[in-house]
Image 1 (cartoon, rainbow, N blue to C red):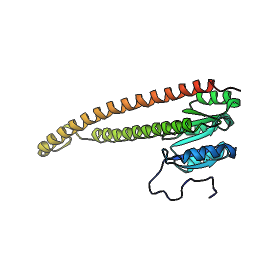
Image 2 (image 1 turned 90 degrees about the vertical axis):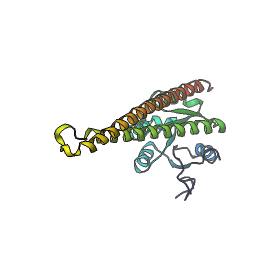
Image 3 (image 1 turned 45 degrees about the vertical axis):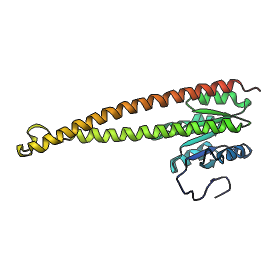
Image 4 (image 1 turned 180 degrees about the horizontal axis):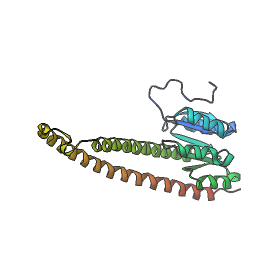
Length: 221
């Protein structure tokens, strides 16, 4: 594995994994230094083309994609659309210089999560990566809750009622009924919690994109 392919070999814990898509290796160096910031503690891989990045997304699990705006926009937003089609939410943060303003704007309007301007400002990049990873984790928790809720629903839906069960089990069924009522209350509370989480995630995404577009307007050719 080359020097740019991984920031850690055998991490003691499972670190958040980033995929950096960038064909210009001089642009990668500042990102690598940023990924080494003690506040981030991440692992990363690098792809030099959108198709290469898509192949890596299909082969492995990532929590964030950082891509040059020009690369994300290539081949009709191939990379961006592929991340949006994944079962788990993977935010895309684009990097862009003043000369790439229009490309970055199109990528953001198509659903990229945030923007890192270049030349890279370390604090801005760290904040953008931390926020994107937080959003990725929140969306993963929401997806887990939804799967758990569906399991509850399927189990309750399969529960026999009425004359389907011998009357001898009436007392047992009564106790089970009470348990199911309790589960249903738990489901309701969890659904309410999941709705709140989803609304929060949507607000964060909208805020992040709005802030990115405003930052883009400050870039001067």
